[in-house]
Image 1 (spheres, rainbow, N blue to C red):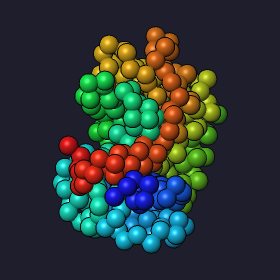
Image 2: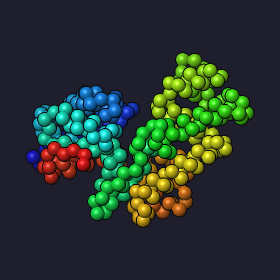
Image 3: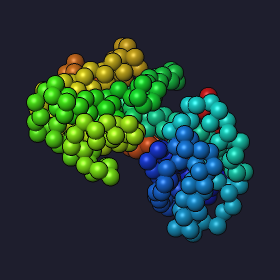
Image 4: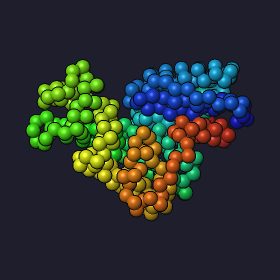
Length: 303
């Protein structure tokens, strides 16, 4: 089937939402919806993706059946083999299917398929690189709370300790500790104003809640505690890049919501490799889907 006549679909799915781009006969649309990260379940992932695909097909006026659709997906959790296998087994009958991690599609989008490295900095964090010889390297991605260095959840978790110390008397309360408690209060049924209410908040907080504290850390970036956390985040990004490319030859793009803030915290020794992302994760997925269609490779899964 000619690439310009096929329905080509790219998907970027995570724990907070899904973006889908579909291209048909020279036209392209993008739609978004609920999460499709594999940690939330294969059934939910496919339900979300197929609903978005129907929406995109209607917008394009594409009457092609699913059997003529080439789809590439970058999904959070695709590096977990049992989730990956279950997802692929549950797939509808498509002309082509390629499943990758959302980190890899972010990499493809950021460098438009050329060799390079990325560190994705959102609620979690992960690093990925593609070398000139085709070799792929991944760093991090172990998840919250054991990993995800330099991420929003990582910053928020560590910043919460300042609120703990302020409320139990280990340090004097200040604007930073009060701002942290105010933000926690907006995410709780009860105001966080004392040790008891903070303990209750912490006992039920997940990575999304802790990540909501990251903007407070950024806003109070001159506070000694926040400053130390942001400095450490920059050092951790540098350490990830060192593991991705020990020779420091690949261009490095920081991606995700925290990228603009943390770019200035990366050690100056890496200033010569930092570049702006050229595209997004969903654009990277669409590029892979186009390659899948052109090469007629058929069904593929993450290696």
